[in-house]
Image (cartoon, rainbow, N blue to C red):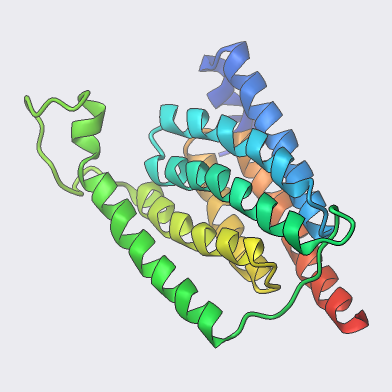
Length: 220
């Protein structure tokens, strides 16, 4: 497939409003990652705009796992905003640290619980798509394609990454890098070309963020 088939052709069937929403969500998403690299509390208000828009966008495209994680992002952004505000002397910037054994234990539990919960949601997806009517509905995971399975995986990865970021742990960037790389082909497959480019930019910025936070910790 060429560039037009991958990135442009899917948008021929989208409304101008759908394209506008995806572009706005992408802009604020990139702005949020930029502020995160700078350890700037504006990561959260810009992130809230992006994730709230993606809840709507991803629901319409049937990516329930990614929709759930963006809803989780929105809630966690409020939580992280409060934590960062309390931990910042100038109410803008924060200090970071490495994750400890307890943090990794909690992260592991979050990962497993998320995998189970999102799989359960996909199990009931036929019921959800049928407006919660059991008429002519067969529950199960038979309807999942490879993008849906990747969606379940990335949802869990991003959930842990968001929690580690709220705790100001440097390792949060590792989870963003892994999840972002997986999301690039998944979003292309789902016809969200703009979003796939966003995840490519996110991957690059996540590498920068990891080394910036690590450098900052050594300097301090």
